[in-house]
Amino acid sequence: MVERVGDAKLHHLCVVFIDNVQVYASAPDDTGTDQSQAVRPPPFTIQNRRMSIVLVPKLDYLARNRGFLPESTLFAGLGITILLGFSVHFAGSARSSLRDSRDSNRRLYAENEERRAVEARLKTSDERLNLALDSTAIGIFEWNVASGEIHGNPGLWSLLSLAPALPTTWPTLWESHVHPDDLAAFRATRAAQLAGTQSFTDAEYRMRAPDGGWRWLAVRAKSVA
Image 1 (cartoon, helix red, strand yellow):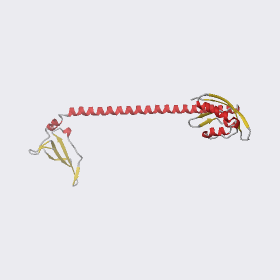
Image 2 (cartoon, rainbow, N blue to C red):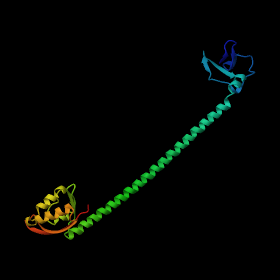
Image 3 (cartoon, helix red, strand yellow):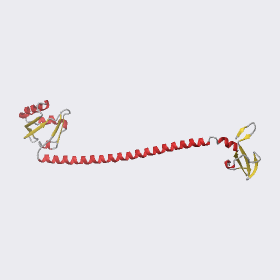
């Protein structure tokens, strides 16, 4: 609190109270001070006596230190305004992100529900198609030549009373049931279609059933790629 130690010039008037009685003052009176700015720390006890020290700033000290108060207040206000602006911006961005997330979740839920409904309709249509094919003794198959897999409806095997086989074993298994007298024509027709010379074939040949008998099949096949 000393402004210049050499001449003992103080920034504040120091007043000491013991049991609320003034016992010391650094100046004979309080002229040149601002009592409203007095610093009054809590009293303390020494040997069962209440003591307090009050510091009152001098007017010339306040004048010197208040020179930059408007500018400091202005910059502080600008800083607080900027911080509030950032807070409002971040809060708005958070609300916008939350709203977008909710909208996205609703769209995803609606799309999932629509996909489930479509899958349910496709499953129902597939079941109806299989029932119709089974009742008319018609089998449908799709042969992926590149992978060697053949996929067909259950009625395709029921025509021969055979249990469904693995897709990759169908070509060999199917050929093994062709009648020996029809095997050459069967292979020629299949080779012509695989070579691309015939995109559509309509052939009839005999297939062996598990009971040892022979059944005539009419097979129509079309190349799509």
